[in-house]
Length: 273
Figure 1: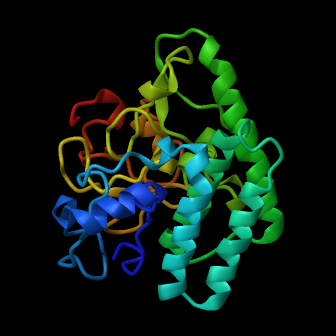
Figure 2 (figure 1 turned 180 degrees about the vertical axis):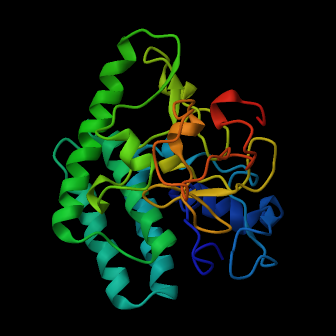
Figure 3 (figure 1 turned 60 degrees about the vertical axis):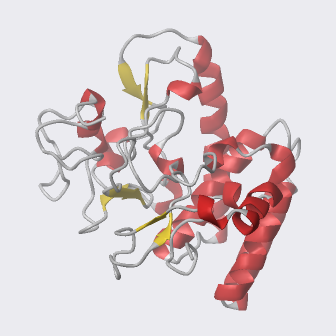
């Protein structure tokens, strides 16, 4: 019921082995409330608590089949125009040159596109879509390259305009430039700290968890920028990574922890993790 509730459906829930588990052992599915803003009492599946792996860990050889199941799911709940957009998107992803070599970028791009749809019910226009693919591909390569560098402090991933994005600025083609952060450039990707759920190993833009590491419902979501679920107000990413002590942006950009909502600290402090 995630898709019907307009909540992002991780492909790791749609692999053949995951579907067998759901059908053969329905008791493994954990349900939670409070994730649907229009109906807080509605129970939906919590993929993370149910034991499904993070979507970012989906192996390349399972991508096509899992996406095929995603399209079957969408055909049951969406109009043909939406389904066709996802069919075209799947073809775009699977037709990329050197699929295996570029899979990390392909998966990140796919998660972002599908998450955007479930968060906003919209798709990027074709020019912006293609430009965003180029940006994600470059960001992914930079992420791999900087893994060999050294460092000792928390800092953002490479981005073009971190301050403008944290203030909610920028066009749709720049969606996702602001990332969660990691402890120095030399720390492997499994040490990435998500500023939405507080777990290690992924960015906020790719987070599929519905609850934090302390099993509390997440309060923020990624819609091209970090926003507070309850009000859709933008949350300052720079504040949450400890880089916006004196705000230089408008007052409608919230200086609160993106994990717990407390204004006394940002996510980088790990106070609430």
